[in-house]
Length: 84
Image (cartoon, rainbow, N blue to C red; front, side):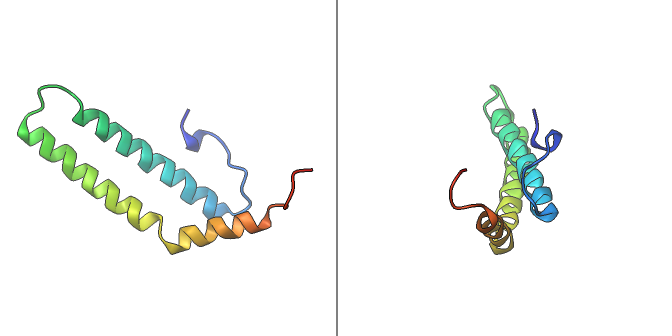
């Protein structure tokens, strides 16, 4: 089941959306990796897949920047210290 099909247990709606987008992009990367594993790909097919993979990794790098990390840290700070 995909991440966007389930609700996330975080208070921040922005963080929830960003996590869902991250999950979607990770699924895209996984699909591209599986495509690269297919036998008998032409050089053109490999180039197209690699170009898409490059774009996806750039997007992930930008997506997971300081703002995203700060939102995660803020969410973690809201959590209780101990499980009760």
